[in-house]
Length: 331
Image 1 (cartoon, rainbow, N blue to C red):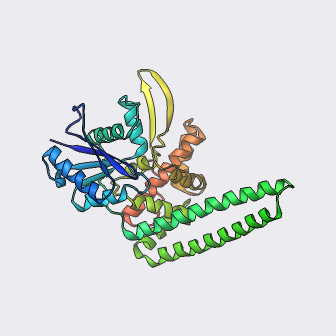
Image 2: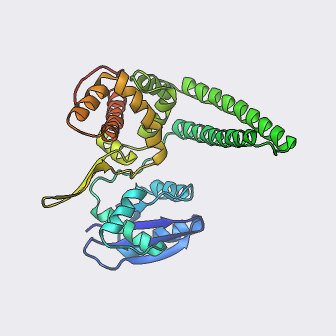
Image 3: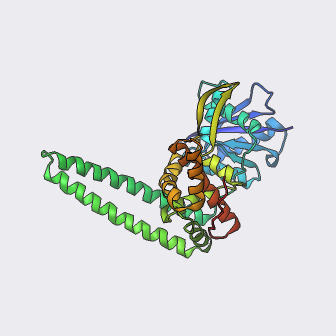
């Protein structure tokens, strides 16, 4: 007997749905507040509904900003099995089973059913503190860089017109200088954090041994690979949304193979330009890219495969803890 409890998380409340098996049509549902009291009520309801202890239950939670974090940590501390849902995959799953409506209870139902039917869910484990600290530094510098670009765009637009007030010009110039200074400061903090943390420094040095992977990309890939307990490179590629998908029916092909794009779009953007470098400077990636072009694939299709190949290389290097060596094998 297997139970799965899907939880749709919002800032104020949790909507929960419990299914005993995939044949069960109607889930048992409950709503509670997203706080310590609500967590306690959730555990009591889960055990009463299933007649099982919390240690025997599985929960599937869709990440929502930071609002899921306390709940996940609470359930994990009680030895419950917790899975984190990939938002894109769950949405496509809902469409596949004909669920077109959307509200919190429906979403919880979909999560519970997805948990019962999915085959490659990865149980959640706490991310090491040094990784979460690195993540916070990178998130902040990313936000600063975006704001700097917006200010530069404003400055460029202002310079193209002659009716801007001098005070506005000075304000934008001052803002740009402040942001540039703060970005340099965070770059130093990140560099120090890497150098002072032995495990991160070792992984970072391994990452930058790969042709096509620069320092910035190395940090992002390191965060991806160390954020979850991935069992294979294919799982990582799927998580990031770089796995190819196609739709066929009989002899008809409705759509050319394409990337699933089910993961974080920022991560794929971070791999795009490194892949463009790798197809020129990384022998393994270049061989794959050239072979696909020779087979008649489009440049974008080949570049997507190059991004996926980079993920495979990075995963293998961190797994075996050895610097990059040319393999010239297809993936």
